[in-house]
Image 1 (cartoon, rainbow, N blue to C red):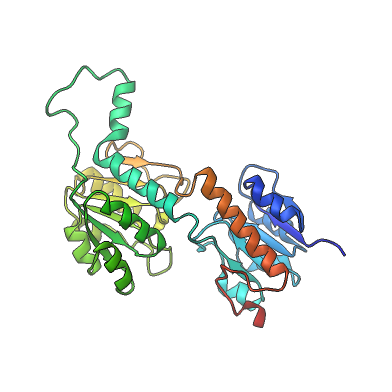
Image 2: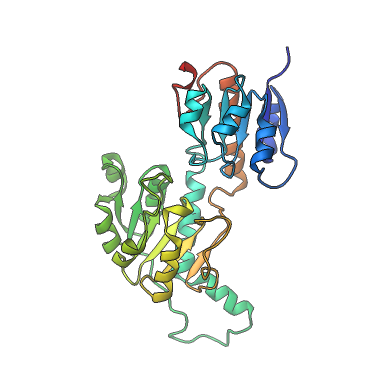
Length: 326
């Protein structure tokens, strides 16, 4: 019997590919870039499974091109705003993601950005490398204190809760807002549930941990930025379009907030004009899950989801369990 055919849209860590190849015939995109739509349509035809990236637009046309033998598209990410879930469900195709395994790494990067902006690490590094440092002085390049301040977490899912635990180590007061209160989270961290406006008005640091949905598009815009303290710092490791980047640049230039730490961008990989020139911003190129351990575990989780679906089982991280009942 022929092995099932699996297409992987970008090369991932070898351990995950080895797991797939022990059970399947695996083809991997040979180019070190995202596939365009025509390439993706051609690549997925006749496949039993596809391991896709957050950069792949898995629309109805792509799902249709995969054909009736395709059982699963396993997304190599926790977010899945790049996939037409309704179309996949209607076509009987499972969609999975990679939750949990990247929570710690993403929260670590969010906190690294927070520290970098508050203590002006990026500015200080550039200043020193340029040979401008002439010696210590008492008012030189003052930053903001981190310990004992108030952290506001928008979105208290897995990553948001890990971020809260990081903040506890800095003796921070914790505020959060989510779709509903989370008593277990509150009991574990001492976090206090408030509405979004209250959080924005009271927090010294605002960290975003929500998925990108129609409800969260531009969740932080001009109005929200004006509610924040002038000394506040905004951190976004969620999805770029959760923030109105044009409004953010304007607020940073006007001094309406102290600074921002961004790992994601609204028109990624392009930046809003003016953003890169701002000294009160720390920016990283979507590195939230970018550790050897996490990216390997993401690949293994995606591979296990695929193998489960190919065995006729419901994959463990399925987002549309009713798909095979269509």
